[in-house]
Image 1 (tube, rainbow, N blue to C red):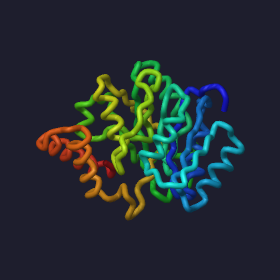
Image 2 (image 1 turned 180 degrees about the vertical axis):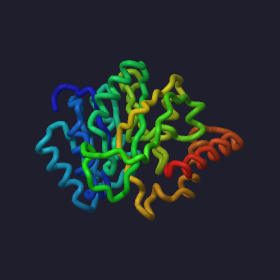
Image 3 (image 1 turned 180 degrees about the horizontal axis):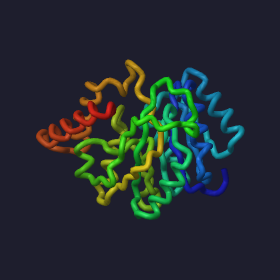
Image 4 (image 1 turned 135 degrees about the vertical axis):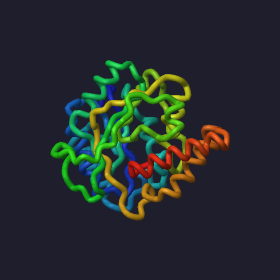
Length: 260
């Protein structure tokens, strides 16, 4: 990788050998090709690192980064963001996938709207889904993006799916995720919007979100409620009353959509 790409794709990886190949191929299949993929192997104990290095040996746009000590999701993402060279920073977890025109369409949308933070709709698929993103047939399980969100809107719930989010580093600067065990992506969107401006959402589906496996961290709604409360009270500094209001709307949305 020599000249700076337009988009830096940030991918944390931890024991993701079962799904990592699909995620990587969904980036490689993008109709927009001017990207770099910074994938941080977060002390994996499976074959994740071998998969990453094999992919990088065949595609120099892929940059594997290894951490022998666990960083957590926020730390792994931040390690990649700090090395990013692109004007736009996009996010994809190692168990999710992008639809082929995601970057092409979202970059055009960003240019059209002038928004420095954009996001979009996405489909949910089963945890065991083994198809390629390029061959995906719409399944009706669509999480629709709002057309626009502000800081005030986002205090009601996290309306931005991390796998569809993209921010403009030239305009916003290099923005890192707060060092939280969970909700670090939500905290990043809030910190960007707290500075003013509006995030714009695309109704067009951009990605495939793999539903949580039974017993996974993201399936534990009680724990997520606790993390949301910490975010509202300790990170955002909201009053107890306003935090409770935000927590209520976020929990209702979680039950309705199957994700907080």
